[in-house]
Length: 206
Image 1 (cartoon, rainbow, N blue to C red):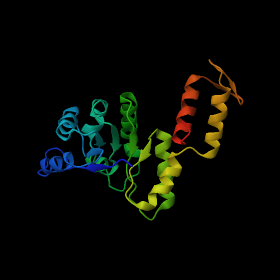
Image 2 (image 1 turned 45 degrees about the vertical axis):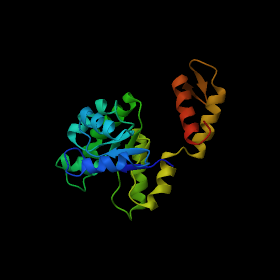
Image 3 (image 1 turned 90 degrees about the vertical axis):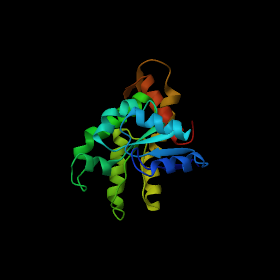
Image 4 (image 1 turned 180 degrees about the horizontal axis):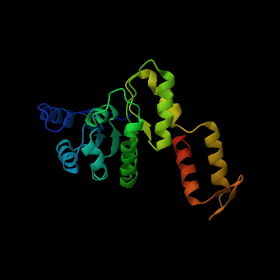
């Protein structure tokens, strides 16, 4: 299983020590909080000589996300810090940051890197956590940051394809013969086959 270590951000007094420690570690990745520019990401990635996962947690980071995605291996939405940077109440809903979340996903897709949703703070609210996972998946996120072991199983369930999705994907791939055509009373074309193959890959069949 890949391991990533979060270092302190650019401009903090602890980052140089973190870089030295993580560079000498056997971790697969490093996580850079509050990534705000392409220059920040490249500078840290070069110093670490490790792939970097960039947390987008500020207005500047959101606006620079397309450039950051060119140097990072993934983008992570830092929803708590983002709310604070936008001067929102820390318990604000996701609606005020919905544009920022979509911009992070757009940047990740354009840069062909994964995008991960932010954390869910209410540890005892299992229903709310699952609802937020489903919302993140509907936006296009590939997964979600977690802060408690109890969140692992429901997160995997929410972001993984259901059995119905897997079975439909199998039938669609098998039925496709090229070009636009009818499949189970709907029109499909190559983009739908590609989506079905992604679902099968996530289910371990790709």
